[in-house]
Length: 245
Ligand SMILES: Nc1nc2c(c(=O)[nH]1)N[C@H]1C(S)=C(S)[C@@H](COP(=O)(O)O)O[C@H]1N2
Ligand SMILES: [Mo]
Image (tube, rainbow, N blue to C red):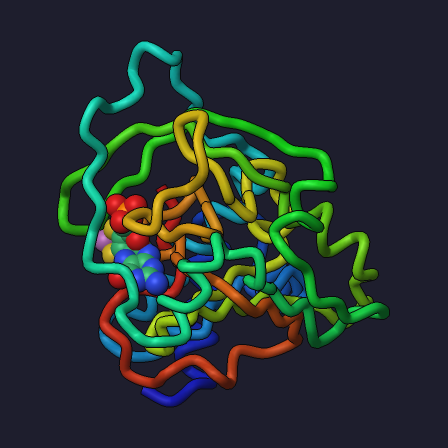
């Protein structure tokens, strides 16, 4: 199906979902509010789009569930191995004092921030669940600075639509729209369960996006880029781009 007829189908679906009175209204709404995800094509595209669009229409500002301290998992599962390369080992040996995260792209004041710089911002702690698409999950207390605060300090330009986040593990590139980037529970996370964030869980720094599945919470992040497009995303990825829960 070509992109044009896909868009027509999507906006027809949106008209039904949102209960608005006509296709023209739905099409305008979809365009204006950016309700078409990057993986709108392909056999799962319509489903991805309707999920994304309806979440954005119905629950744009909703909060992920937060749990009482008593529900924190005793043995949280660390998925995969921390990076083994010399650069990471060197940074780890130095207590990550030299870890930096670059803030780039559509911002007025690009920056390079250390963990100490991040900790100088206001911190937020929240007890949320990390759920993997494979079916397992755990609950932990996560501490960090809201991404919104760091982005606001850098001065987001009006064209901004997405934030890309890069890991020292090159094959892990994450991205969210501005609704999730600016959401109060989206944290640049440096602490877990009262201590430093362990390397098993992405220490010294990961982005926690608690309104989406675990694979959007990329570990070992060292660069953020505010953009107006997602051209850098690898093509033909199997996970859906939007993984709202
Ligand atoms: N850099 C990096 N980030 C990553 C992953 C990874 O392997 N490398 N795995 C993802 C997946 S699929 C999940 S479910 C969670 C797991 O987080 P955990 O290791 O804290 O359990 O991290 C996500 N972020
Ligand atoms: Mo996962």
